[in-house]
Length: 135
Image 1 (tube, rainbow, N blue to C red):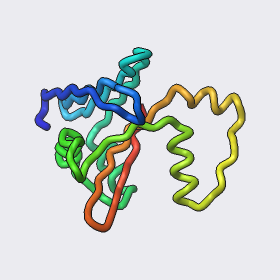
Image 2 (tube, rainbow, N blue to C red):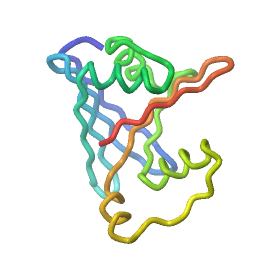
Image 3 (cartoon, rainbow, N blue to C red):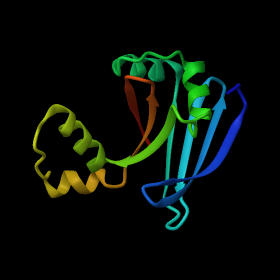
């Protein structure tokens, strides 16, 4: 992706259709997702330092331009996207850690239910990496 470029695509996540808009503006990655049925919307803005730090933490460091290119090609065999709720993300973390999950308190749960996380999943022959972006 080049600065000033924009990509818009309809993607189905877990059986629900979403409109996904990805824009690179002044070295800032902007991701907007809207539910095609309910019109709920989520948005996130990410600078290069944040993206590079997050990819470093996953153990699969990517420079910002490379990450943006991967995001642009996210419908390929090796790069895919997923959209998770906080509960989905917590369940994945607990499975990875081998922990049996337990329900959170109602107040904390309700504050997090509106949040969504866009996961860029990079799959190669013997490894699979994913890194969440909060929207």
